[in-house]
Image (cartoon, rainbow, N blue to C red; front, side, top):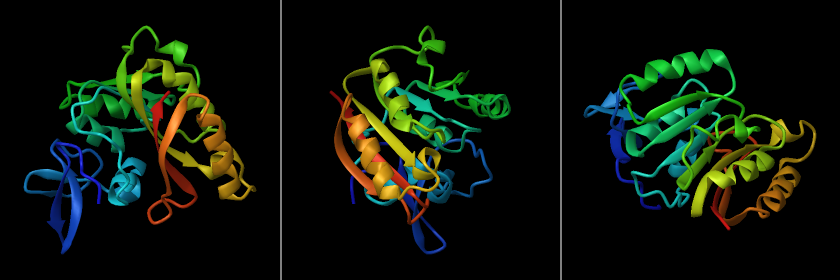
Length: 210
C-alpha cells in the first residue's frame, strides 16, 4: 500500500480501516475521532488512494481541481492540500461549493469550463504542484493537456477517465488506450489502474508533466 499524503489517515470504522481527512463534513459522510470518512465510492481520487495507487502527494500541494461538482472530493483535497482552485461548469454545484469554502479558506471555487482554461487563467496561479481531474465530458485527455500550462515543471496530473463519456459503445480498454496516447503529448504516465472496484469503466491515471 502506497504512503498516504500528510493529513490523510486511516481510521477503523465498523471493523474496516477507512480513509479520513480533518475538516467540516460536506456530503453527509460519517466522522470518527473528529475526522471525516472519505467515501471512495463517491470519489475517484479516494478510490485511487484506496486501491494503493501512488499519487506522489505528500500534503500541502497547490492544486487545480477540474470538475469539482458540489465539493465531495475537492473538500477532502482542500483538507490536506494548500491553495486549491476548484473549477466547475454548472452554476448550481458552484453555489454548493460556496458553503464548503466557509470552513476552508484555502479553497477557491471558479464557475468556468475546464475545456477553456483561458477563462480562469487570470485567476489561477501558474507553477502549481498538481491537477486533479474528474470531468464527465468527451475529450478528457485534451482537457488535461490544455491545463498542463498551469503546472510547474514535473507537476502531477491525477485523473479519473470515464470511458462512457468518451464513447458509449466502444470497449473501455480501447478508449483508455486512446486517452493514454493523447496524454503522452504533455505528460509522462507513471501509473494507471482500473477503478472498477468503486467506479465502473473508469481508469485512474498518475502522470507527470514533461
